[in-house]
Length: 249
Image (cartoon, rainbow, N blue to C red):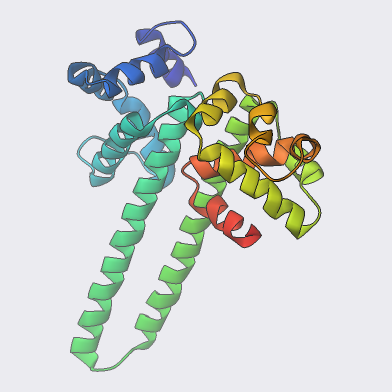
């Protein structure tokens, strides 16, 4: 937290000043972009280290992956990703580094298999053990990704004064009701003006939605919390949570 606070201080004390800097960068200020990336290298290194479980410096390949991911976060950031650029960037950096680790592990496994098959002509016990080890590693990596997504999702929900227990309590009980609420969320996502109202005012534009959907205003209001949560997932970078939504359809 001290690291983040110090970096924020360099770019201004006002809340949102970092996000305002990013919006300027997205308008084409390349010099400011390079400055921001350079200033946030410690943040990138710390985030990458938390994934790799070891010290990371600028000579490591993982650091380069993290730096590229941070730049991607700058270019892709919008208020719809949540009020905090750093929370969004942390999600992207960890995902990219995990993908890199997974790819490297897969390549190492392939090389190991090729060598064993060349030397022995058939699968060995050590090869089978390597397969099991890689599978377990993959499961751990995917579990970490899910946890990171949920943590980021919870942070964005808090901006709307919502929580995961709220969603459990207020989710529609029947499948058709959930599908109707999801369709309302998809309608909102498809309209830029309504989406901006939601993320800027942190309020569901019920009156405007009423004119665009087939369900009643009362139904929209009753499922307000669930609809907001679905919009957050649909507009965010949530691989696993979006898979969950597919199961709702």
